[in-house]
Length: 110
Image (cartoon, rainbow, N blue to C red; front, side, top):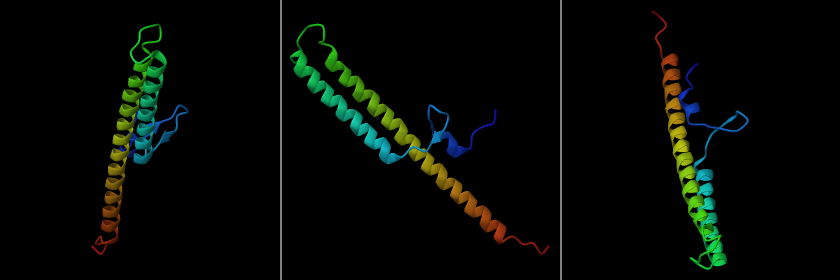
C-alpha cells in the first residue's frame, strides 16, 4: 500500500469514500452548534424532570453533557486537521516555488 501525500493525510473521509478538506470556520461553527444544543438539551430536560428530581427520566439531562463533550471534541479534532492541512499546503507551495525557481535559473550552458 502506498503512503498518502502529506496534504491528503489531513483530509477527512466521507462515508462514500471521498476525501474532504476540513475548514476552520465550519469546524468552529459545528462545535458552537453542538455545545449550544447540549446546553439547550440540559435546560429543557432538567425542566421536564424537575431539576434533579428522581424518576425514570432523571438521567436525561446528562445526555446534554455527552453532546457537549462529543461535539467539542469532534470540533477540536477537525479544527486541528484544518490547521495541519493549511500548513501542509503552504509547505507544498513553498517547495513548488523553490523548484520552479531552480528550474528557471539553472545553468544549462555547461
